[in-house]
Amino acid sequence: MGAPRSPTGGPATTDPPKPSPPEKPLPGDCCDGGCDPCVQDIYAEELEAYEQDLRRWKERAGRGGAAGGEAAGG
Image 1 (cartoon, rainbow, N blue to C red):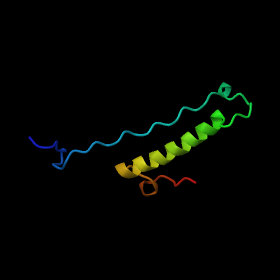
Image 2 (cartoon, helix red, strand yellow):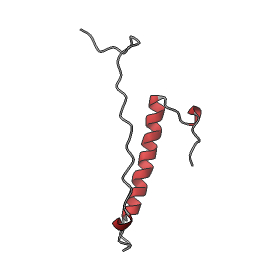
Image 3 (cartoon, rainbow, N blue to C red):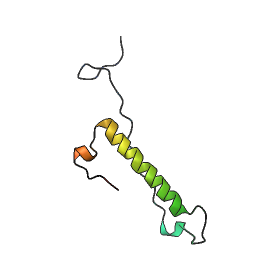
Image 4 (cartoon, one colour):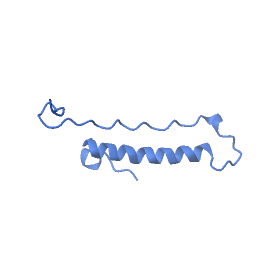
């Protein structure tokens, strides 16, 4: 028995799972006390990282991007 094969006969590959978006803070999560960092700041950083991860995931998996009909963000 050799390595697993794909239906097309090539080596089987496992796609990485699609990234999950961060959980958006609830309105009551921010105390408006000027915390550093604020939960809103943390969310913004996590959202930016998620968007980058999602772009890379789409590129690796051939799922679009600007060439696939999606508008480029920015």
